[in-house]
Length: 112
Image 1 (cartoon, rainbow, N blue to C red):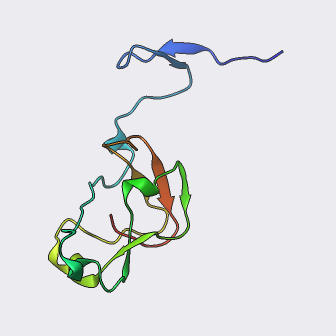
Image 2 (image 1 turned 90 degrees about the vertical axis):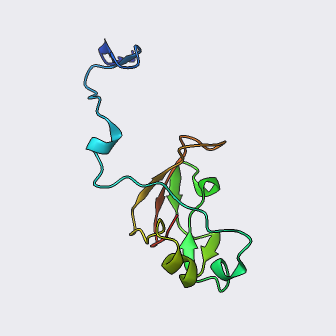
Image 3 (image 1 turned 180 degrees about the horizontal axis):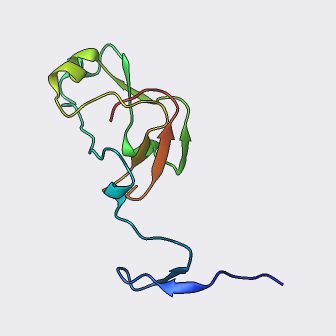
């Protein structure tokens, strides 16, 4: 016979969750939270040559990401202050759009 964990009310969302779960705001669990940036798509110099892996929300499929699909140039990294290179094992979370809530863990340094 399958047993289920004891449940409790979450309070904040007013739903039942397992009793042993803790509820914390996401920023309490991570050292840094940032949003991504899209270089101006009409500026070819931001995309050629393809030098730096660039993660977009469509890459997030609730799994590890082992190879980049898109790239930007070093010039884009220099000229756009919101872009920065994230280390291996960085967790990405889609915050808006059709992929909201999807996650991915990068297995190579990349920006977003």
